[in-house]
Length: 116
Picture 1: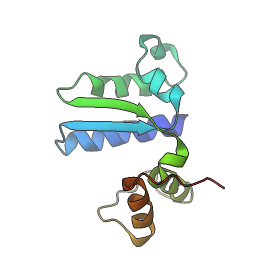
Picture 2: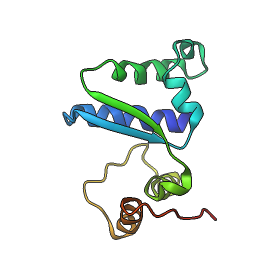
Picture 3: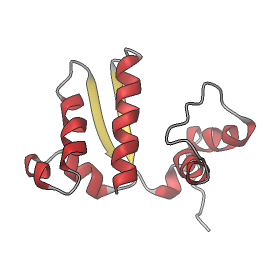
Picture 4: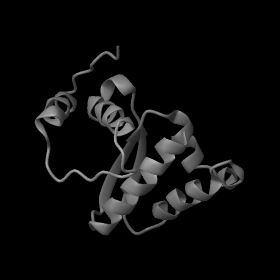
């Protein structure tokens, strides 16, 4: 759960710095979405991180959180697998690699890929 919260926080930070005014943040974790919307989450084990995420929710932009199933978000699933094998804590991609292009296309077409 810490990894998912950490990823959301850094993603929100990057999007905010890029001056993007509309964002739909999708997560396959209902618990993460629930925690980001609860005031009592500040008492959670990762309360400090959740509080930082909630601070972004009060910024002047349109930010929505949405649950998605792992199978319906092949891009995120493939990036998570790739990230687990990566040395640096944060990797920024400025182009869509051939590896990722397949998954971006699948997501854009609404294709659900089964997890094996």
